Image 1 (tube, one colour):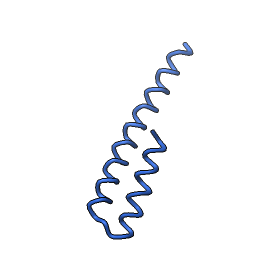
Image 2: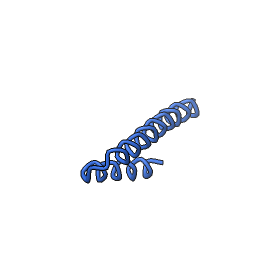
Image 3: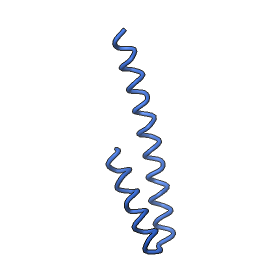
Length: 54
């Protein structure tokens, strides 16, 4: 999932440089959503791993 976030971030940057506002905004929105989903899953995996050691 992190790879998809990076792909959409690169697409948003390239589209922003080339001036495609709608495409850049859409790709940036998807990248932001995927980043937060990845972050939540990462924190949950850390918490579950911490409880598993007890």
